[in-house]
Amino acid sequence: MTTACEAAPTPRRSGWSWLGWWLPVAAVTGLAVGVAGPDLAVLFGYRSLGPVAAVAHPFARTLAIGAGTVAVAGLLVAVVYVPGAPRGALSPVGYGALAVVRRACPVLCAAALVVALLTVSETIGIRPAALVVDPPTLLVAMATVEPAAGWVITAVIALLVGGLASMVLTWRGASGLLMLLVAGFAVPPATSVANSERAHDWYGDALVLHTVAGVLWLASTIAVTTLWRRSLVDRAVLGRHSRIALGCSVVLLLSGLVPTALDVGVDGLASGYGLLVVASAALLVAGLVAVRRLWRPRRAPRLWAAELTILMAAAAAGTAMSRLVPPGAAETTPYRESERLVYLLGYDLPARMGLVELAGWWRIDLLFAPAALVAAAAYLHAVRKLRRRGGTWPVSRTATWTAGCLTVLVATSSGIGAYATAVFGVHLLGHALLATVAPLLLILGHPLTLVRCVGSTRTVERVAALLDAAPMRALHRPAVAWCVATVAVFGVYATGLFDAVVLEHWSHPAMDALALGSGVVLFRAVLGSREPQPPPFVRLGLLFAVMMLHAAFGIWLLVQAEPLAGWFYAAVAMPFVPDLLADQRQGAVVAWVVSDLAMVAAALSVARSWMVHDRASSAAQQEASAAARPAPLSS
Image 1 (cartoon, rainbow, N blue to C red):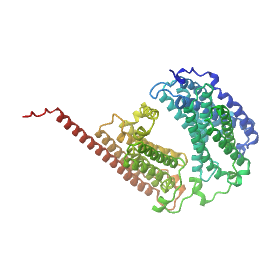
Image 2 (cartoon, rainbow, N blue to C red; image 1 turned 90 degrees about the vertical axis):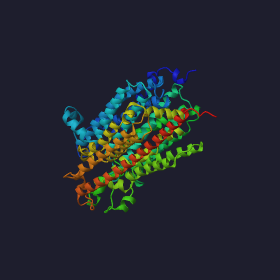
Image 3 (tube, one colour; image 1 turned 30 degrees about the horizontal axis):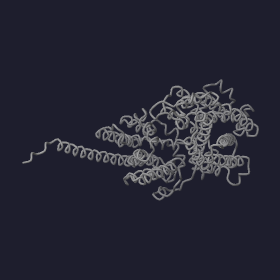
Image 4 (cartoon, one colour; image 1 turned 120 degrees about the vertical axis):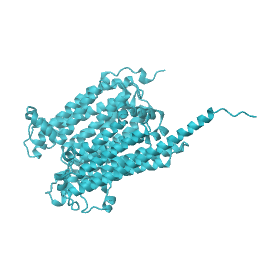
């Protein structure tokens, strides 16, 4: 008996006609925003770029979102809804779905480049035609204007995904393309200029979450609607879509509160911008109601049609809001010296820094804090589920995982995270916590072992297949882990990269993610349970090599004659940091000590496991010898 996936023919081209549906949506959005919206070039003090540019910008932006969601929908079909074998080829339906990825990604690439070109034109006041015939100026401007650079990066990622989609044949390869394309959608909001001068750190993070969640929800709806047309939707597909839509809707509603509170407020809800915000929120709630009623099969087609209409309208409204000036930003005030930190960091800081401030002055990181809390809650839920089944789980592992999540929370959201953007010494401390202490504790929690204990067979097989992919196997090698740790320290600070990006908010969560990721790669290679595991002396040698790396980095910081990013920290001018070079040296010593303490703890863990393994091997050999010894003759 064959399943629906095995018996399904290759999808027809007409089954993936969503790009055609997005063209009128983009056209209507472009015309409406171009006619009713302000001319941003004029607001910036330049000549108007004309009605064509005013219409083309929102048209290209909406088309980019539409093409991107169609491409993500095709990958969701291949990876989530109709997947093939975890370690084998894609299903016939999944392989056919990659055809739409190959068609949608070039459209996304072209639309993103148009958005980048028009963004540069509005920012520097040069018409698009003049920029196109002057490639040197265009390239320099696209590299300098960060919102345009973000769209260029998205275009490059779309072109790469579209090209690889014609070569990918396995489920693991399609999973990698899905993660890469979704990450590409996080770049434009991360590099865009926030409308809010205050709290632009919260604004940027919320915009990233909002964009990614919206793309995933809309793409999932497109995917299941297409599958329904081909009679490939069952309760498993409905359940997966319902979970994706529910999670994305929660993220959308919560992340939308941040820019609304900052730029609109209660008084601004009656403005045109505020009415768009209210309409978008109402559309999201209506879409969530439609999702919760999808379990009624006879109503599913109408509900999906309503859900698609609602989400496409919400995407168009989002494009319109990106071209309008919110009420909060329209009220400009002259620069005041007392608000220097607000302009540079997005928030103010106390005039002193001590243990009380580092421990009690919290500013929640909207990216890492929810991730840490969700990870801790999911782990505790899994442990409870395992014990309900009659299984056991060491309390020490639960404690170390919880402590690791707490370390991430403290390093990014406590006073350490708040002061890290203004004081380089505190930044080094937070980097050390994220690169060594937190990943060590997380790896000692053995989360993958817990997944194998409580996860379904399907989940365990998928996770194991991803971890056994060639890139993941390469990261498990000690030499590769050491190279990743080197890039996380010398590659960021010794190359001038830190000086170049320290002013931008997106660089701080990016550096935190790099530090945490490099630490996970390192300690997974040292303490991971993957087989075959490197010999204990190799793992101890890797820890010693990383300790030497930290020593070299600490010494390099200590001998510097000028402070890193001194121009930035001099502009911040915290009163309790009179000597930037002394602060850098103090931070280098503290980070060095913290990192080496984590390395020593990891070495002790390796030595302990080595001794336990030797004792077990010795006992097994003794039992084998006793079993092989002939029994004594009875008298």
